[in-house]
Image 1 (cartoon, rainbow, N blue to C red):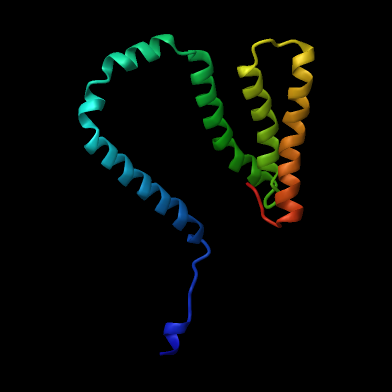
Image 2 (cartoon, helix red, strand yellow; image 1 turned 90 degrees about the vertical axis):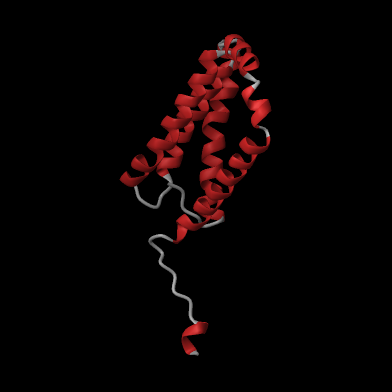
Length: 139
């Protein structure tokens, strides 16, 4: 009876429970959408051709590439300075800056100065909040 009141937590894998649960729920919802909307999905070829022909490919694929690069570099850079959040900080500043430049229509100095300020201040503020106020570590 004493063993029923004790909980053993494997800290090496406990952080994987919630993302795995969310992933499984998203897969189940995706399958249910595919099943219930299969006729509409199969009939949407012309709409997707038109969408891909008219979309801004540089911004779409640039955002996709930058986001993948951002998340794939955050942990290796953070491993250089473990438990300091430097991976987040050193990846977020250039990420916010390059995404901002990618979506900026007029790349003049007048428009870039606020972007530079935001690209530095936003990640530093979030890093400080998580690190010093909430006592949470970032990658």
